[in-house]
Amino acid sequence: VVRGEGTAPGQGAAGEMKADTATEDKTDEAKDAKSSAGGVAGEPGDAPAQATSKDEPLAPADAKAAVDSGKDGDVSKAGEAGAERKKSPIEEKYSEILDYDEDEDQDPGPDPNFYYELEQMYARAKTGCGAGSTPSNFLTLYHSFGYECLKRCNLHVLDEKHVLFSAGNYIQILDLETKKLTYLPTVGGRGIGSIAVHPSRKYFAVGERGYEPHILIFEYPSLKLYRICRKGTETAYAFLSFSPQGDKLASLGSSPDYMLTIWDWKREKIILRSKAHGQDVFRVTFSTEIEGQLTTGGLGHIKFWKMAATFTGLKLQGELGKFGRTAISDVEGYVELPDGKVLSGSEWGNMLLWDGDLIKCELTQHEKQNCHKGQLQEIFLDEGELITAGADGTVKIWDFETIDGADVLEEDAHFPMEPMSDIFVGDGVNIVSMCKTVTESNNDTNSMWLAQDASGGIWKLDISVSLTKKAPEIIQSYHAGPIRGIAPCRYTHMVASIGADGTVRVFDYLTKRNLVTKKCKSGGSCITWPGRNVDSKMATLIGGFTDGVIRIMALDHAEPEAHEDFKIVLQHAFKPHKGEVTAMIIDDEGQVLVTGSADDCTLFFFDITSNYMPIGFIQLEAEVNTMSWSNS
Image (tube, rainbow, N blue to C red; front, side):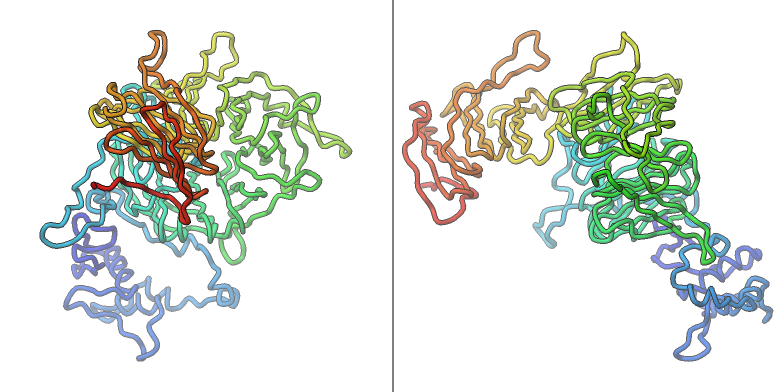
């Protein structure tokens, strides 16, 4: 096989696979025969395989024999063996559902030393053509203040200094010491669904979004694009997970197919695939102890899978968990135990111990208290201890042996126990994912973990059971969810933003710092930073919120002992609208503030010079989405 530089595996410089005409050895002849048997054009002068009739193409085995007999009319042993072998009646009947036969699939896949040219493949901005059009590299990414903290398992440790997460169309690698970010673009350009890190930490996988999205496998720390797995789902990947040995990759597709696919990712080949469920599936993991066993959890279900050898070949067989007398629950977090049992979380915060497809018992705390308040998000088994994290912002450590041996009477399926230790991270914290840090010495007694907070942060936690453990520390802070508005300062290198999470933030984009954050009671919808005709100090911010409230805020210097350089002080708050404030504008003289709402279809006018006294309002017949002052 001849491969051109910078092309995909198995393709030549012209983008097509070509058979080598040189006669070197039988192995090369077999490879050439295999390439030609697929019906792909060869070099000029090669005799292509001919069909036995106009309407009947050669069978693959016959095609191999025809190509291998090119020299002296002798059929090669491989072709002869293929021609003699006949399919059994069972193989004929089930040929369409035969997923995988390891003996027949001998394609070695791409060369181990092959890498894709990401620079030539990544998604670029679409611009016009012809003279005077904007070039695609007209804008380049300078810095990102974003982090998709609501995405499941969007925080991974690469080494002792770097963590990995996604935001928009970019993979971001954060240096925990210097806070420097490294960016990797995607190929599809429609967003990122999921990320997974290889057990060796030498590779990481990125599942994209978009029509027939790719799974991109990057090498670390070179950040070269090593492999691309194609056509595993229709619209987006919801979750990715490597096997403990690292040779397989499991992927979950989102709506509409919810496809569970097992990959031989180094060969870019699909081993097995099956529809995981009829509703949203949140995650998939391999068993760490039992090879070929997987678990999926999602909306109102948990499912237990086996890669079983049947008379029709290797199959994925799934068994749906039966909740029985226990209320049906969404399953976000779970862990496979060494003996094959599975421990899952629930919406109400308790743990469910599964033996096969049935619930053996429900673990609670004493006096009928739930293990967590709200959804139990994560469960880990680490160094003989069981760790849980929930939406209540609490991390708890449990005795694994007690849980593993839990047994109850049939009349009462609850098993009460108390945690060995617990850590309350903070008010309003919602832990959706955790990952253990690594040290240079790879010390197994390391107790430091990083936690993904759905409220917009990355925390560093010491979960050791000791009196000298460190307090939780927030190391990064972000908007949680959509950013609804931004407003740059006209005379400084600062910009204000407002998010659906109700936070107002001010950034210095020159130094790439988040200067100050203020949390409000309702979600933000729009923001403006008035000029000097309103405030000579340029310290005023005006925010609109989803409950119809307008807040006038002032930026001021913080106290010396504060962690931030500035603080945001609320000066005025009034509620002119019944619904979300969707637009705000100030006239050129800085005297009149106009606010509009798409919900109640009204415009309100305020006199800025009279401490924002209302002037009047106008009822419109259409939604207000944007406004501008005329030049006259």
